[in-house]
Length: 125
Image 1 (cartoon, rainbow, N blue to C red):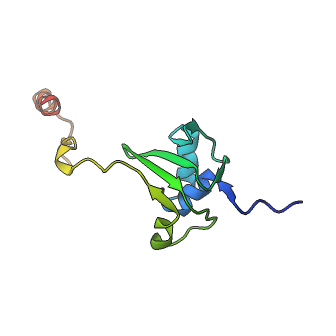
Image 2 (image 1 turned 90 degrees about the horizontal axis):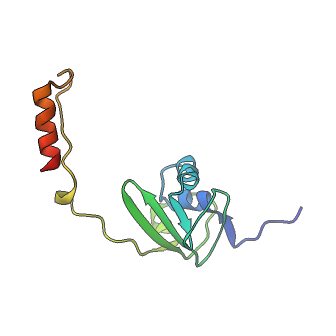
Image 3 (image 1 turned 30 degrees about the horizontal axis):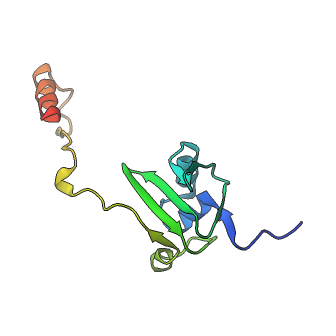
């Protein structure tokens, strides 16, 4: 059996190795769900990634756009991981622009019709 090429690695493994996702299974799930694109095309977790490829990852309502500058096979420290890609992502939205989430006290039970109307009024305003 021939040894694999040193300049290629699976896309799910690389995404996890450079700390774009917390676990490799989350990276593979994102690939299967169509949240990962390499050079503009949806890819499966086993897609071969090479240096110079553009990877787009949609995660937690934000799109990360990175260009692969170095191939790593094992998970590396944060400082080394930052050297493995060039981040072209747009900046995250400011905190004050994020949507307000209605919060109910624990143990308060189901909202009444009046409570529900107030929650809906907050969401639409």
